[in-house]
Image 1 (tube, rainbow, N blue to C red):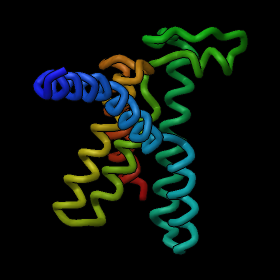
Image 2 (cartoon, one colour):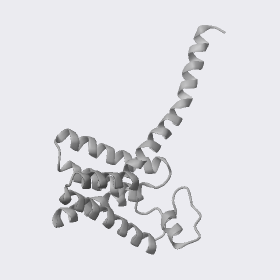
Image 3 (cartoon, rainbow, N blue to C red):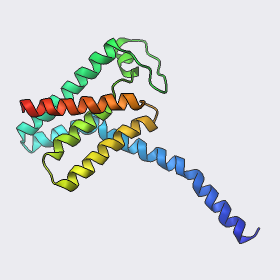
Image 4 (cartoon, rainbow, N blue to C red):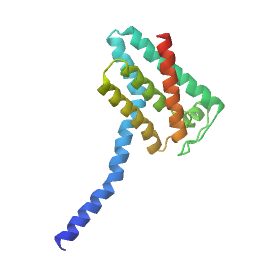
Length: 164
């Protein structure tokens, strides 16, 4: 086999890895809008005794969660990868609109954007967008679900700004 073919074979083998790498990247990004990270952020902020920020973050977590459950209770929409359900709670989890991951990511990003400079704002905004896109890429949501989550996160942020 000549060296030209080996180079092409190597390139083709590497190209086949790209979808796997992209999938892994978005699987790693998605939890940045998840409840575990949000809970850790709450605990750190509480540990730092930043009570105003803690209450604002808790408000955002609870309000987005309540709105998601309310909407999913009255409006069921299958996820792109349909999930079976046998109980009310499973139905809420199986429903896709709106994306709670995206709502939390947007709320967190907007909240922490108020604390930093322009670079922090850009990074946080980019991360929130990546979380939203990760939900689409992983086939947990479609664009409308993510857009709904973004709007929910923004509205919750502005309500939180009004109250806290």
